[in-house]
Amino acid sequence: DAPPGVDAPPGVDAPPGVDLPPGVDVPPGVDVPPGGGGVPPGLGLPPGFELPPGFDLPGIGDGLPRLDADEPGADEPVADEPVADEPGVGLPGIGLPDISLPGLDDLPGLPGPPGADAPDAVDPVVDEPDVDEPDAGEPAPAPGLPGGCENFFTSGFDIGPEKMEPFLTEKSYMTLAQSGTYLGKDAIIEYVGFATKGSPFVDVEKAVQVMPSFTKYGPDPTFEDPTVDFCQIVVALASYTRLSNELSTAGDLTLERGTLLKVFWDPETQIADHIHVYYQEDFLAWFFKALDTTNTAAMICNTMMQQDKAQCIRTAQESQVTDINECIDRFLALPLADGERLYVDGNTKGCRFIHASFADTNELHCPHVGFAKIKDLNGFTKCQDSKGLAPESLFLPEDFLLWDGFKALMGFQAGTSVHVIGINGDICDRGEYLWTMDEEFKAEADKDEDCRPLCEGRFMEQAGVCLPATNLF
Image 1: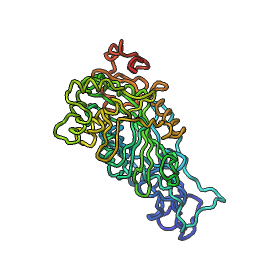
Image 2 (image 1 turned 45 degrees about the horizontal axis):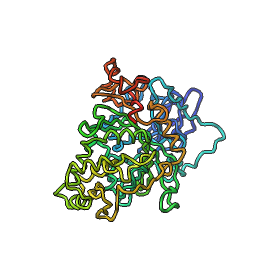
Image 3 (image 1 turned 180 degrees about the vertical axis):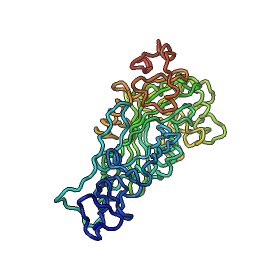
Image 4 (image 1 turned 90 degrees about the horizontal axis):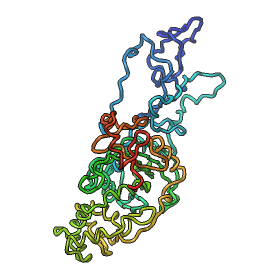
């Protein structure tokens, strides 16, 4: 006879006093008594396997047994997860989405465009004979990543300038090969702020797609101690940027550009020990050339000649700057960047663009803007000599394969990481790549032909996207 409350299927007698083991899929019509297992109905997981708190397995439940019609909640729809108003603010300002880790071999990525093949449904797990099962007292191994790296994805890590502070220390550092290394959380937050809408050069900045990928748990050969292991997370993202009308030649454009980062994460402290950043030369050329204006030169000279900051007064004196017009002429005579890799850590306009945006609120940077080789209060000299660090030294070849795949997914032309998708505040219809757009911008996308004539002359049109003409670079 079956125990009370259990209806055995016809012809099947359960031994007296035997409860069905947790997670076993029972035939239709069998009611499992309360307390029969720790796995939610329909998961079909192996006996004794329970999910750790806060984890979810994507795809589980698709194609699996559902609640019987007479069970509680069977007719109740599943509520959609709430969607955040802001996906984060771009690089800077990456808002990593909530990511459920499937395990070691299947890592999260971007959804495909509409019409892409959906993943196959997961078949329910069926008990098979002659299969060794773990002892009842031995817990099954929890899904995760080597070294406990899954806590990066559940930590809420964000490199928006206001949100990243809890994940940094005074020993953390960020390196962009072309502009240098920024040591300590305050310096990192300043640098990240250079390309956000809080910067004097940027009016709009918003991340629209983010793809984080775990690559490995191991040492970083560029780190001072090559024996220390880090969780290495490659993050590719696409952001929309609109530059200042006052300080740039491109304030009428909405630009989409890609950024590659590599986060070296300490899973024990949940701290980003260091971060590497990569911009392709096409974006750097566009960005710094757009800022190369007389108005920008005047802004930088006014910063250097501020009379209410002691470090700026010292900088002007040692640079022999007394007249604003003379200062502007000297500034405009500087190179925009150095070499084909467009280094902006040497004696260039580009380096002074960066540090002038900091000096207005932090006079430590005034010496970096000057023309003379002046040490700051920490004993460092900036914007004088480039280190010429190769961007490839900060990333592995497989990191760039992820980067290339992300750019193709987002619709960038081969070999590029930037294109113009709007002009005069109108966003052009991105054609087959419209799915990649943030909902706010998608709503603005111009479905008629108003955007097209604006591409003529200054832009060429390809695949429904306004692209920069080659002479802009």
